[in-house]
Image (cartoon, rainbow, N blue to C red):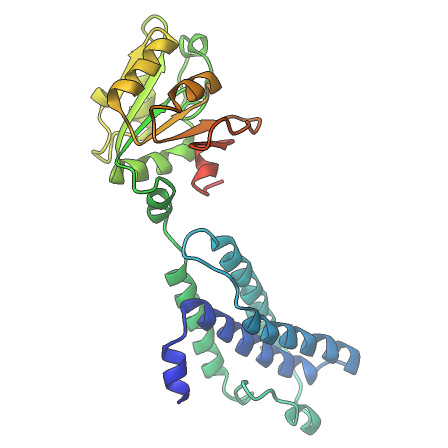
Length: 286
């Protein structure tokens, strides 16, 4: 019966169950080393974790990964405590042996506890979504994305700055590469003079063109903000990413979704316009 119940448990319930077993084992070990007040404190940790199972943590595969991270951090603390206790000299008293929780193995079964630790991290790895999965989920399986360069992909924030240099933000490269794996991505910007070559060179040096999903022909340049708006209207993307709130407002009627990026958290201008301080933050990378 126990095996049948376990096999039907979700990954979340398995994680909570493994943490419970670990905390119970640590409580037993510490009860033989410390005085009664400390022992009671440790046993209360075991009790609180036991109660956590009845609360049924509300995880979902993508949107509540922070909750899983919190449990993982707690489990790591329990594991390090357990390892520290293993190195402590001393013997267990008969009174401590009588207080072994029912879900905890014998203190001589350290190999079994190590198996529980290994199981926990295998489950955590299974439960945590990859960046690619997060990108696809946040983009609602969109197939075409347009994105401006200044203030989103590049460190520079104005065409005048591009006349001197173009610098790709290192933290954005991984996100861009994941977007190109599932979407048709176009980058665009308003430039002055011959800044196009400088921008393309910066993108190439950063490795943006290495995946094959983004090519130089999909990096578009214009001389006015109206020109960038026209690019977006003609391409008809599922998503457009920009820093100019006026353009976001103008495009809200024509583009399915938009992401407005601003260092100072902007106000949401329309139901289909999302806001974030950076593209990395929007995809959970910051």
